[in-house]
Length: 248
Image (cartoon, rainbow, N blue to C red; front, side):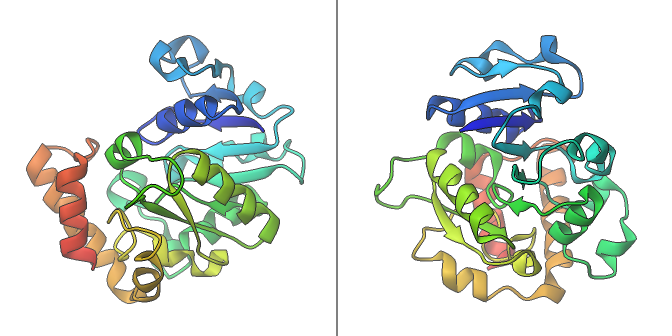
């Protein structure tokens, strides 16, 4: 497939590498310009372009930027044809994103994103830690392969997202509609807990929506205490242990 990726952060750079290594035609852009994208991100054949160029003539657009920056790219997304699948990897963290009243009042994060962008989206790759994503991908049918939930309102779009998750080295779990995607938000049992496809359904069903924000904020506080800031992601060993202790 022809894929345009916006963002080369923790998740974005692994998406670029793995999807281009899987044989997809990948273009990637960030907010600082193509000359700032490091060579190792492009090592599997992806091309560095401007943000506008990344969205031209592609089958799929993947947005891997902080949630609070998504409204700012809505004009760019407006130019993307309706048949193009748009996948969002973001999560709401108030300490980083600022307080978003609609989400605080109960709107599902993915529905807020869809509303801000003015089009349907797929939610994928938001529920795995960046270190696990970078290091723990395995070929299909491997024992203990980690699963990643994928939610969308369109069956077609969800299937595309699931196929691409598989191409990045993880089992795709059909997480249903966007209205239920709160079950894969920070604080939920399937968020960053590195579960297998067999374990995922029970964890997905066990989520308790009212408890998610407090659990999320406890995890942030613990990570900040450990690593010293709110932007450095923990390694997989600590991150998974912490997420399992707080979310499951």
